[in-house]
Image: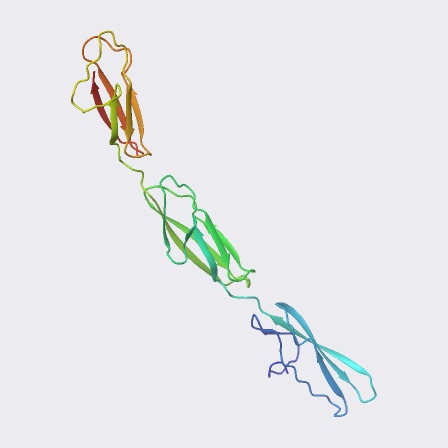
Length: 231
């Protein structure tokens, strides 16, 4: 018998992690003895336990017993992070604007389990779902971990932090007077948002009279605000 059940033939299956089985044999001759070899230190997969029966005259016969330790059903993750953020603690992750790919790190609790990741391409302005499927070592047990990834929307800030013309702060709506014959004027504009861009037009090839110098601040999301410097 193996673990209390009668053994006749075939393979005895035991759960993952079992390291030994109890094998009991009864000989036909009460004078014979038996010894069990290999019933300890079992490994995952197929194992052979040998029952050696020694007759009273010293001859012996071996009887093999097949024992199969089943593979793990463990589908747990020790680590799951997306773009450096712990996704086991929080299944919703927010990433900076313009992030286009979810960088997933998944470490299984069982080294023999496998991981498949899908949905790592991110689209701004919508909820993105990253799927992490862990398949246990037994090949049939699986678990799906879903992580929601939100890409921060691009800023719509197209305001100015500072605006100078000819080296002095310019107040919108006022007029800057330059000496006769001036052909250009230095205009420096700084946006409030570092992700915005600034374009200055019309500050060269000035003519006598009123000139309008254009300052356009384009926000990260593409919206813009125009400001005029009157020279």
